[in-house]
Length: 320
Image 1 (cartoon, rainbow, N blue to C red):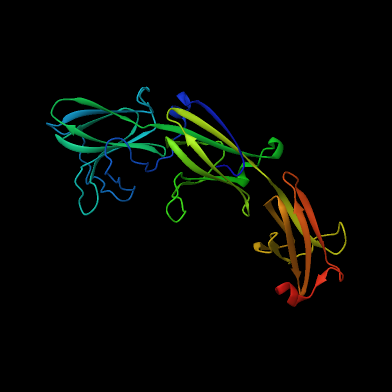
Image 2 (image 1 turned 30 degrees about the vertical axis):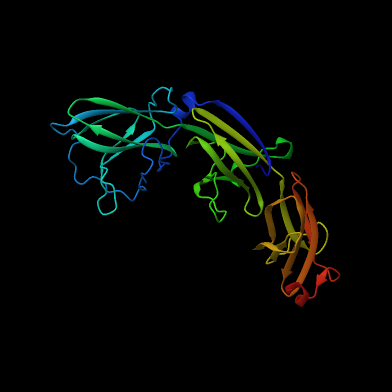
């Protein structure tokens, strides 16, 4: 289930989920309307005109949402959308919306679909509005997920070099997983419906990747920290040990199997690599140089490739 070391800590969300900033987006559909496919942000028809929602002869409906069935009302961060249940040209007409906590709508009597979004968590419910005021509540069955990563020994990774992607926990028949949220910053709280999610942690931009399946529980904050077995490597082509880097050098990096995994151009080739054995090939003008090296987790290093006649390769051999 884990391709790295994962430490999970569960604490109550409490004020944290209620007060943290909201990332507004369409959420998964749950709660009472199993056959409903809620349209995306651009797939429903927005209200026409600027007519007030306070309609004469309509009924007042108060809407509230909770994280769990016994939880208190969420006081901020909810995005409410009210739809007519009959699609028009393949889209559900949206008749009202509101941002905040508990919301009150004045709607004409009839049937509606109500969707509440709380970050990436959400719930949908069918309601009926009459002439008398009434109240409806939606249970989001949601929690929070906070992600971070370290190197061996607990060394922190610079946040700018670290990113997370959250996928659905269940893979499709072809093995692919639906992406829910890309490029999540470390230590940010993401609100999600309760369930299992597949999280991909990427350190750098080459092959330092850790995959984990993580469960989010309703009403709780799950904190997950993964451990990357990788290091930052800087390579340079020099004419002598400790010499200046030679400019205009083309670099090709091969893994232990001989497969190319990275190409770059410049006096230096800097990158984050997962632990293992590699071969670096440097080309400058018509000369090709090669060196084998090993990456040890947590040990950043500088690799010097000597541009000497003895180290030079035959160009045709290097091309192969």
